Image (cartoon, helix red, strand yellow):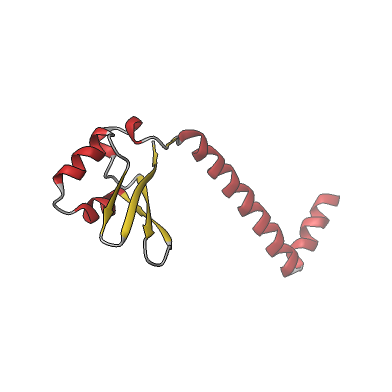
Length: 115
């Protein structure tokens, strides 16, 4: 009975209801993200990444502009686009011989793969 009155008070006050719903949604979100963390594994060594996944959406590369010294991140598909027709550099990346390449003013380095 006492619990019903507290719920009634919460429902009558919009701000309290919003706080209650916000905390409930936040708890559910944290539970979902914690479940996903246990399933994913980050691989940071390019030699351990499956050869067919080096240029995939799950692969992240760090791009550093030589002139402005700014950093950004791209996925493997975008990194493959930076390579263009440079088959020699592509072979070195796939074999794990190197984990970076240079394209114009950008230095592109393998960052991680989400397994």
